[in-house]
Length: 337
Ligand code: DAH
Image (cartoon, rainbow, N blue to C red):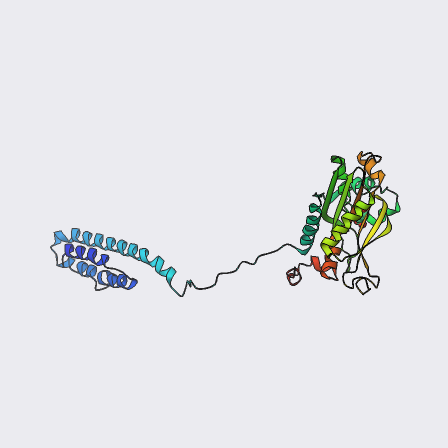
């Protein structure tokens, strides 16, 4: 067995390899215990002494070359073969589905309500949840010592002078009117806070949507028209409305607005407490003192305002009897919307 024949054989053998098995056979043929390399090494003692060193070196070089070539060959077809191995990769297997989220029911109702008002020409504006004492109270004609403050009491920030969590979205009236001149028509959705004990109809945090419109010659019938269109759009064309006299410090006259019960259509049931009517919002003509505070002339401008609780509207619309369900993050509830 001479070195040159072996070398030539290696090249032609390598070219013929097509599988892992061929590769293994080749490894045995050359590098196995009785392989050609072993035979060549075994022939060294039979050589003349002066040839042994150089022959041994050449055999060693051939062995290393062979190892390199076999490793390279292995790499070249072991990768795709591994990927196509049916036990590891099944092209027919269904993928892992990504679950798609959706908007929270409260966000959906806010969007629906805002859409109704933007169609009537209202702009959607937002205000901060941390408010000044002035915007939440004084600017809205609720003086410091007035008993009506109790109804809108809130959480106060300890270390910041006169900052609080807004207890209604009405402070946005003050912010918008301080920076813009009439005519204006705006709705303001957002979170509000009150130190209420939590039960099926109360939370310390909930959502409101404030709306107001100011221009010359705005009258109470404009308020009625806007609110009636709103109620029909959200609850259906048969809905009836009722305006009851009420008191709010920031409007005069003030009303509470009821809709005919959507469960019994006005006949009287447990949802409406046998009254046939459900209260949905407060409203009125903006008080002249609010205009004076923001620098509007109440002899020129008039306007209306209204405020509604989003959770209440959602509960009526979907027949939900516990406000806490909205914020427990129970997917069995949330997935229904
Ligand atoms: N801010 C009132 C509340 O939280 C709701 C309200 C009533 C807003 C009458 C108004 C309004 O703009 O005119 O109960």
